[in-house]
Image (tube, rainbow, N blue to C red; front, top):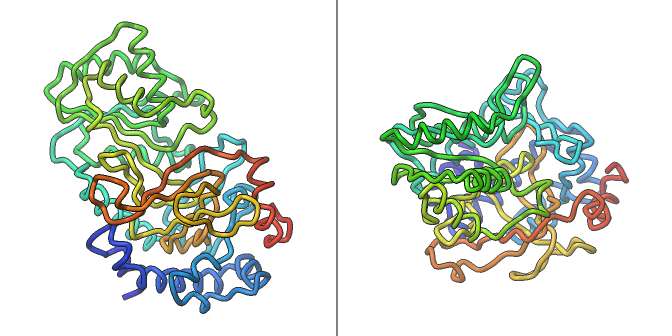
Length: 372
């Protein structure tokens, strides 16, 4: 059995201490696979004087060269032939550029095991038949974005009765059907089934505000949930505090804060981070997070703010072993959260943007030979 298989079969999804040695083994295994099968990735590592066998302890993880997400938006890197890819996905492209990611079957199977363990830990799985409102795109073969695939996958956390989408596919493309969504919500509210919503936090906020403006107040089934993922993207200037969003969800939908959930992840780092009851993103065993100084890229201690470097051995289709996002964040110790999970938690502070990431990641650009 591979180290990756053992890691993604780990019983407690938040036991970082117990899984540390296995995580390092899985990272070395993953880096070696990409080193052998992706010439571009091998060149990047060798240019920095790094080889996978140098990964021996958890302290060595910070030495693994990082690839900025911006690099994947401008270059395609693959470690397996496209014909062997079971799944392809892209980032949302809100900046005008998209990352293109390919998965092999084993990648997909391990990701499914991860999702089941995390959602079970957070009690997000339910046998109750459920109606869904997706504040995003209706699935269509022309849409390969990861967010549309993830939102559709979310509708399997509980048996789906019906699925309504804010953006519906028509003959010539997507059309926003806000009025239809309001009518659907009212219809769902009269049925004896839970309702789950899923969408970007911004889309959720805008939809709730529209309902409030129209004087629409419903009391959904007590098992209903409001779920969000993907951050505020291009609407970051309109970002509101979580408390305000959750209060509006209770006012308009009758869904209390305890049943409002947020998820974090990225197409370049497809690990499921689910918030706890305190709305903190605890680090699961399938990943590690390093906060790096925005100028030097050196690792920062717990509590300091810097660029978020995400590591995982999940994917073999593309070398996503260690990527650096354009998010600013900080890590907090596990005991600073009252939920009882034993792993540190990640706080996302904001985004630096494309121009900022190029400046902050000057060291990364240098290791990539100026290819960003």
